[in-house]
Image (cartoon, rainbow, N blue to C red):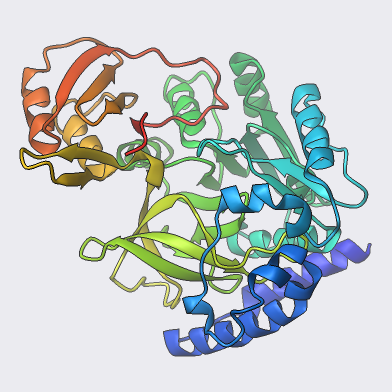
Length: 427
């Protein structure tokens, strides 16, 4: 009963009392929030207590950042609950193997990231943090009131107590395991008839194909893309088939980072976290987010550098929110490509340039993979072999290296990330 009261409190607080009207008042509030948050949690985490020992005189924006590698290497001292990495991994891995995601470590929910950056992240969430997350995401993503009846279909690689906390007497939550039989999942989805459909882009694409062929017939009031990059061509296809805006939730192991407003524009959740922008290319607005999450006290996220490339939208959103608008999530930093010119100078190529070039010449490809294997070579994997001389010529103007073409061989495992651009070497 207490958890439901806390969920309702944070729902109301997020929906009705975090309505900042301008950027200046938001940033002033964030500075105060950061100061209080750090004073509250740093002393409880042996890692942070030592890490910030000599930084107290510096403003937060000058503190060195940490990342997933540092967090996992120091996990035992990083968290404030005294929980060991070994025990956390045992619970999380067993849950994935058994497909039973209800076990906890004491009162704490344990989750495991997909490990697409090469490092599997473990996250710990207390009942209070779980209730805060639940109230916040319901306030931001429910199309109607929390008191209205809703049926939510959720397709994910793994379930978690965090997601199950959304359930209530009025909100019916149904988890669809991406590792289960596809046909069975589609049949069950058709029977369930969700009001809200949440799934990774590759699964939404499959659902849209089934809808277009009349294999299923669903009419969700809201469709939300999660867990992977939503490419523009797939987004346009989904919006055309379902005749509605496709929303996004940018949720990582490290927190609830961004979501779309009623206009379908992606905003950073700057009422729950502070975001420093490490620009890769200021002219284009590409940056790496460095976040401090005000709600994470069990596993504090302070000055934490993510591995994602975000593209900032300079235009103000018509919704009026001063929260930063994200034009797109472009991909992982690990997937930035490189080449060297004749003088040996190294140049970078962002994934978007490759994707746009391929779609210009093969607009209906949907699924393809451009893999740079070393600084001089790449492989273009296409769903079908076709005449692609003009495409290769255009790609070599973007990245002047050797490019070979082969037939795409994707795993049938829908729980895997569906990259379009990948780099297989360290520059």
